[in-house]
Every structure is written in structure tokens, then in C-alpha cells.
Length: 99
Ligand SMILES: [Zn+2]
Image (cartoon, rainbow, N blue to C red; front, side):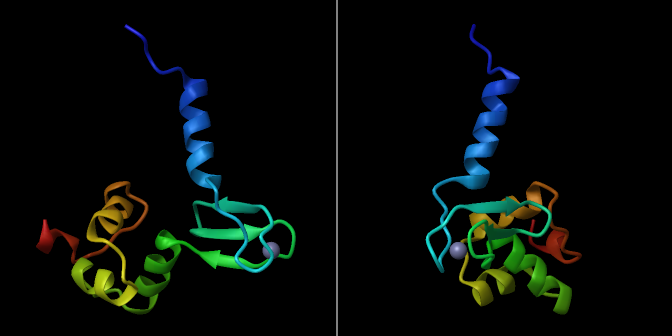
């Protein structure tokens, strides 16, 4: 039985974090911050929020939104958004109501 090595796992994570994402402003390479949920361009410094960052930002101002409300406001798929919560990156006090 072939198991996934730690190295393979790390490569997969790196690949997801950087993926094919390029700067929307200049097309340069970006650096992903899992803490902030942002892509920062290494070339011009342009910052772009990803789904994590956008939800995090929204919840800071509107902590009582439900998951459905967040998905509607940000136009994100429930499945994508639920992953953010399930990974423990985001916490929504109302989330249990919808589980
Ligand atoms: Zn750029």
C-alpha cells in the first residue's frame, strides 16, 4: 500500500496556496496568506482578498450573519464557504443553526 509522504502533502498544500493565481493588476506572482486570506503581489504589492478573507472581513462587521446570508452577499458557493468553517479557519456563532 502506497502512502502519501509528508513531502507530497506539503507540495499539495503549496500548490493550492499559490495555484495558478496571478496578480489581477500586473499579472505578477502572488504570495498567499492563510491568516489574512489574501493574495499579495510580489511585483506591485496589489492585495486581493480570497473567499476566506472576504468572509472574515464581512463577519468582522456583521458577526451575526448566517452562512446562507454570507453566501448570498458574497456570491460564493455554500460548499466553498462551508469548507472555510469546517477547516476551523472561520467561526460563525450562528453556524450551528444550519448544521
Ligand atoms: Zn501585481
